[in-house]
Image 1 (cartoon, one colour):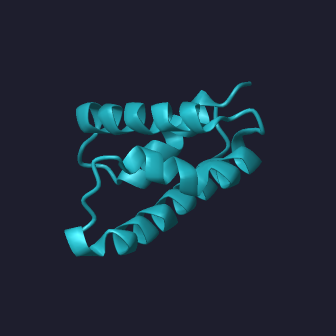
Image 2 (cartoon, helix red, strand yellow):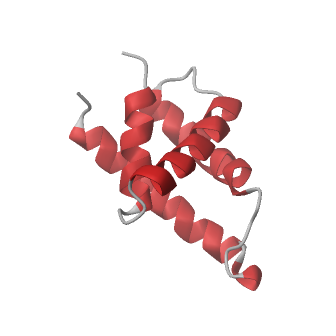
Amino acid sequence: MTDPTLIDELAELLREAGRVHHQAFAEVDGEDPEWPLWYAGYLLERFRALLGPGLTRSRLVCWLVLAADDHARQAPDTEWAAYYAQFFAAQRPA
């Protein structure tokens, strides 16, 4: 079972990152084939505060890719940030 507050906080951080990323890549309409690297750099310290200090940039990049793939397969009609937040919360060590 995951904490709904944690999921809400993660989702809001992801939405913020999405807005900032889209602004940073506005000239190409947000297109960025290396987006997991950008998101991990932007979110790492904030996610460490919520998911634990042992979270590495490499692990976060991996989780972002896995969450994106899982979202596309399992629930493409759901909001991405909420889906990713649930995914990340489930990865947190107990």
